[in-house]
Length: 443
Image 1 (cartoon, rainbow, N blue to C red):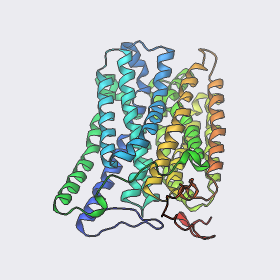
Image 2: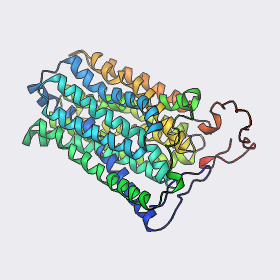
Image 3: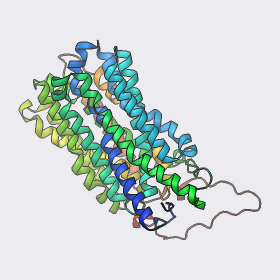
Image 4: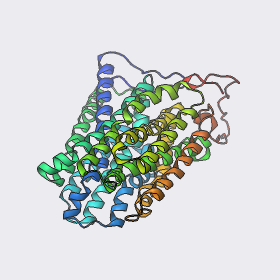
């Protein structure tokens, strides 16, 4: 397989021929399968809390911890990913992520107590968090010429993954038990590893016959760009914080909210699947729309309004109309696609994409992890869910603030602190005013 690398400006795939195409197709299959396998562990458990609770003694605190584990695990891995990206190849990191996800799903399916269930759930979430960080730079590496459409497909399949597990959780649990229902999705994670194992085998075979210069030495430093010293980095982090606190609170608690309002358990699980699947249209449209806008703030505002209207209907409207409000709130999940789109829209290189992805997700998910936990604590039996949804409304304000910070058309690499040159070396000459940036915008 010919070497793959990204050039500044308009990146192109280096190399041609059957080996290059084979590598691209294999990477495409791997990226799509990983996206499809990346969310079942998140949504498979919440519809089954009633069945799980019959075997494992969950209480309000441990249920709240379970709800915050996705964002907490994603945050931890976001911070750990910065040094990992500097030392380990992206493909190898992805395989580690798949291994963690598979182990976590199998472990919690056979766990004998609440602690084991929580520990293995945390392991699965760490794996998914690593997938989240590695995906944007992998897209930049293999498909620099197809970032928009493949970002859309990636986020679309995340929504499919979430919806499929939520929809089949109760039926599988009724037929075979909750342990089978939450453990079967590990098979999808195993399938997602296959293309990457094949791709690495191809690369090793090529390296044995002829090692290309681009593949020699360690990977380029992923932390050469410092997003924490840029408003782009903090803005992206706040977007992840705002959208993730809302999305994962719904994934954890929407069935409980609807059941509390009188809906049957299986119907409430179907509403969660409906909520999840509505990420698809937004995921397909958002990268195209936001990618063409030099200032994409209005796109984020639309999603915030959808969240707010949907929440109002879920709380105050008659339960018979719940599906309408779930649909509207579900469209707000486009903010998640917006967050991923901004990572590659505001960077030019694989290193910049990896650094921004790790920092934004690590910081954003760390902030968002309190959302699902507080959602549970703010609810009192018989007291309604208004305080819980009011807390999510505050996170929507955070989302708008982050989108405002990344709204100005800039590139992260062009606004990072410049290292003082060593004697005998000069810095690269800066771009001239009006030079064209990635995505066609101008500074």
